[in-house]
Length: 440
Image (cartoon, rainbow, N blue to C red; front, side):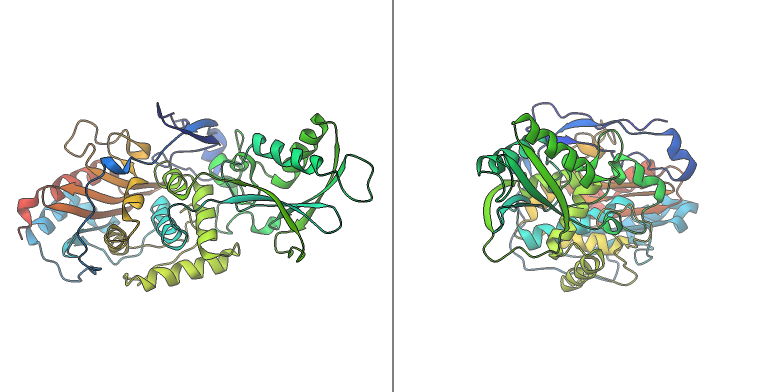
């Protein structure tokens, strides 16, 4: 079955040209990948309007997820839905008071696939705020040369490059060079850091597995991944300068190279604001964006440091951390381990967060939007479940916030080896909607 490109969302503001693979469909490993190639798409995307969301919960402090079950009736219903497959599932359901309404294998670590993005986006929103923008900057150095630095803007494209090169040319070129010749440094991460080590080698050739770099034109993807982003960027810069009647000498420097104290910032190109980036990561499950957000929130593009700081932040939120392992920011690394109880507790915590509305607005919506748009259409779940999907071969996860007449339910369901996971998750969510099962 071919992997289709994401569909455009009519009427939405354009964010940019991005190569995406919706993770509501399987990311295959090994030989199967050779027969499946995702197509590029022009994504039009906005987060859900805040006005259309349910009202913010009252200021009741920060409830912690309880460890004891409090709704035997719902627990029995969930166990009946799972039946003989219970061993391959982890499911947790909680309410806004932190009551643990149902829990099956909730503390058993499992491969979460793209439910991992719920961690990296929460971390980024908390640390950076909803108005934060990634920046691509052009600096003039004391010797008259220039340096281009970036923070991984997934929407960086030719118009931004053309503005940057025009500014460099307009500043008079580089000292000591013939008129019109610009000496430009590209500050970038080393090649060994472009992919998390646990990403399957086959995945790295496809758009969803594109390398994670600071200066990533169209998220380092065209139809497939761009395997040498600095080389492509150099060619694009040279072409842009040439079209403007100049010449450029491009060199590559490590991103860790400090700027001279008297370097001058000539111009910066901002990305879309954080709430748009969150929506790109959570609604459309864009791996590149999730990876960048985790690194920026950690204030380090060293992946080991970013993993450690993400884990520390999760622990500081009072979440159940037993068995949790953060291997990347997107969930493409199969070394990630999460529990459904951690995810339900995180959703509860974020719904009480000052930026909780932005977090909820960034998610897909059952039967309406993003990777959930084709699921549960025409059922009572349509428009009532805001969630994040995750899919790898043999892995299916859906976690999010279910709106009910008795308030929100925080639901996390992770399967590693289920037969018809979407159907099972839909049945679990329908049971969670039956608020009479859990009075009080």
